[in-house]
Image 1 (tube, rainbow, N blue to C red):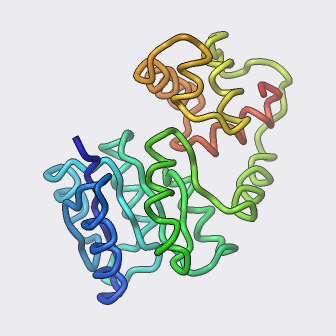
Image 2: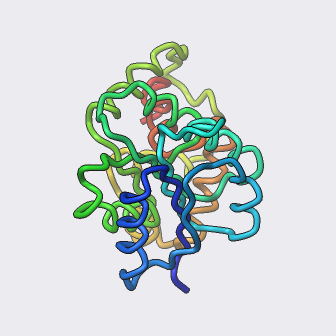
Length: 212
């Protein structure tokens, strides 16, 4: 079954272009596209997307970051890729901690969007080096322990270490002789124990705690 995609983008021309790009691809199914996120909770619950493409700067009472926070109150599984104009926008950092899975520059949508969505589904976190550095540096406020303060199991630590080295869910599954679904289950447990919403945030906390 094709992964379903929802799009939230206030620019009509860009929203139409993204919609066509997704619709014409054979890997994904366009479930809907909207100019604002006013009804995001109802739309996500009804359409049940696998991936959400969310513009950060949207008018109409609720911006992309607020929309992500709302989504994460009832859905921890859906992948959310933020769409932004600037690669050093601090709003991107806010979005990551709100629960976004990654972000993509709008100028790279035509040649990077489909690849980024595949990367997300494979357990990756498409994000620029500058934003990755911001996330990791911001995690320094958490105390360094040098020990497993999150009470991760040996398998969970192994998987988190592999993720920090850039391995996808499929690679981890093959190397550990387990299924991809089992890897996803372990990652879900890791997120819960570490109280994070994204792979990048989990890696940042793990590095700061001396786990990986």
